[in-house]
Length: 499
Ligand code: NG1
Ligand code: MG
Image (cartoon, rainbow, N blue to C red; front, side, top):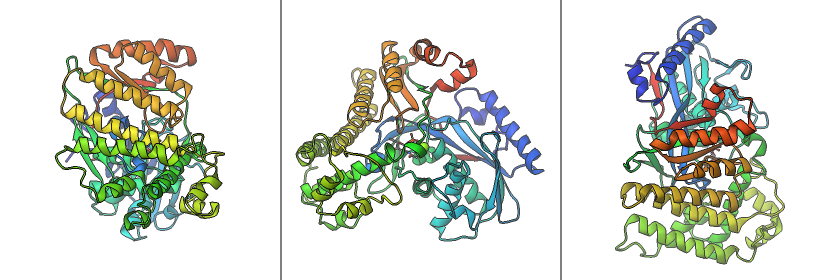
């Protein structure tokens, strides 16, 4: 069994950088825990953030994505306290003050209107017990140390919720599978008011050292490790944070949750257009997604004979792109609420219920269904092509993969409208400095960008970003802050325990 303070060798398999400082971090956390609660923790649970390489805003449409776990993470030091109270504290106690609540009632009572850090802990706790159908959770003491910057698109929230789940199941003597943990965590984040997909939680739980993950959500959750092609010099990834904080909690009604609604309404209208809306697979599912509509449309057709899996994807998605242009083409500048409702033969109130607006309210004059659909289907095409190039490399693989990342960024900026000037600027600078491909990662509207770079160009690209972006926009950054905002990363392993 691993010790509470992992050896440098243990850590080497998780953190490709700063292994010594990580060892000190675990030791410090154990010491602080002892100072706070009077005894050593029983164990430390760790869950990483992730960077999405390609496949943005398609997880909640049921389509596959291509992320990898990274070194920044959440550590939760935990010890059973023999009561039913949970005491949570954070090493950054100024920003995140200590809280105390009951494991049997309070964890089920989450006010999503209040931005409160411990809500994410409650989500993780509640997720496990909702799944078990019980309310008899045990109390424990918690000290948390997170290094994934909040609101940066690197999934600090998933790292927090997944680490919590790990701690909760261990304290309560429960043993869930990785798929259960990932699905529970994905569903649990809805309690903080975000109508999210399952990419982040799956990457955090199932991440594999040295591989990205091709994650499918439908018909069931499946994560296939995929290695990047071997090139000379090897491929490396640089993450650059705009330092524009995209606070989902605040922006959800006009950004993230609005996009979810636009794609959900799109799925309903497309199902009607394709004549599959009344089939049980579409009628009885909630929420209906573009993936389900596509599968249902092809269910009765024998379109895959003699084709490999990638070709089937490409043909089906191309057809969906054509059909989307037909289905939504009469509303090139968007739908009003009335127009969406009438396209579906519903009242605006019925439609609002259908997309769960009481839980996730959204605001827009016009809903851009055509553009959102074009992004979703074309982005999925890029994901399956990206995977195919990784698995069957030939020719200029780095250039091909980079081109797909650049096209993804164009689509996120122009068609899905989830970029921002700072993200665009980072991409332009990195490409000029030699990156093969550059794009935003995660939800967008701020947060981080990711750049695929030849290993021998990492310093050159970082220098260009430091001089042309950070020095100009954030001249006051210390070297340490710059290091947290701009760093190279490699695929790391998923959630685990120490001791
Ligand atoms: P981040 O970047 O963590 O806010 C969000 C969603 C993902 C996915 C991406 C966009 C959450 C917890 N995560 O990620 O499910 O939809 O945006 O691809 O909301
Ligand atoms: Mg998040």
